Image (cartoon, rainbow, N blue to C red):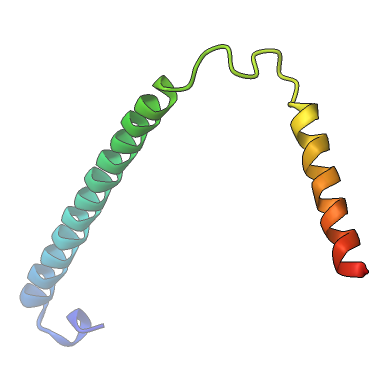
Length: 82
């Protein structure tokens, strides 16, 4: 390392500065990450607020729509196969 090639007093100063810069950068990244997480949570709450509480409340998928989609895809496949 560079600090190993310097006289001891200068090496100690360099190592202290490097540690300080590392910790400062770590704190900055942690603060930015926390701000992004908070912003994502707020956006999630605002988006979910617009979803009606009764939509798919029973937890069952809309089988009629799924069946209609499958039938339509089958018909398209039949057209292309012919």
